[in-house]
Image (cartoon, rainbow, N blue to C red; front, side, top):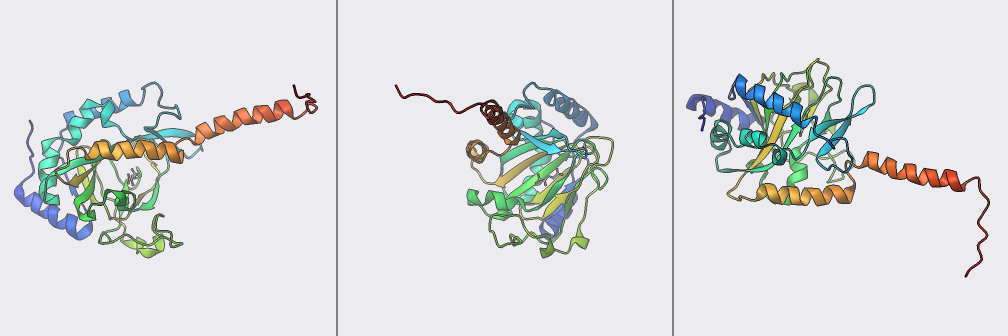
Length: 283
Ligand SMILES: O=C(O)CCC(=O)C(=O)O
């Protein structure tokens, strides 16, 4: 097993930064060889058959600047990629992360966001809003961005608002389930860390963040595992069992499929429309 090349001093600095700002970066914890094999793995994943199928619950779609719907992320992903599972459970990441979070970590979820050139970004949010059902303290929950290609303002890197990771911020209309109103924060304090392939970005579940479109010529790919400080070994299973049921119930990601259903209805409207009413006699 590979061990961490990060010094105790670097971990201490990262720990202070994480708790004061709500995010930090561990530079160069993975090697260029690791990154090269993960990039190759992403290419394999993005050519798997069935990715564009609306009934494939792991594919999430996003519009690019010309309005075309593309597969932007795979969530979950490590169940179809043993290599990426190894990456998110790698001691070079987990050892320093457990020191920063101050306890043993269990994987909660993991997605892969590709953000191809000209693909749009994500509106402001706090991840904890979606994790309240776990009934865990926000301080025990974090996400990590394992960087496969340069991530910065131009490529649609994630922008953080430091120091706001103390509570959930209110939404515009008082709806407790909606993302926070951007007017709740001073947007001029936003910071978009410059990340190189092999870096790991770590952010607190309450840190407000958002991202813009990718205006660069490379896919701004991040592997995004989330973890909780807990000894529960089945947290990941618990998360995705609930998630699959939720996605089916709420029809999230089925927008194209709904259009396909409507196309069938439309065919019936077209077929029946011009014809006379049936004049059937009851048997
Ligand atoms: O990848 C991005 O641009 C944003 C992702 C994000 O905000 C999230 O996963 O919570």
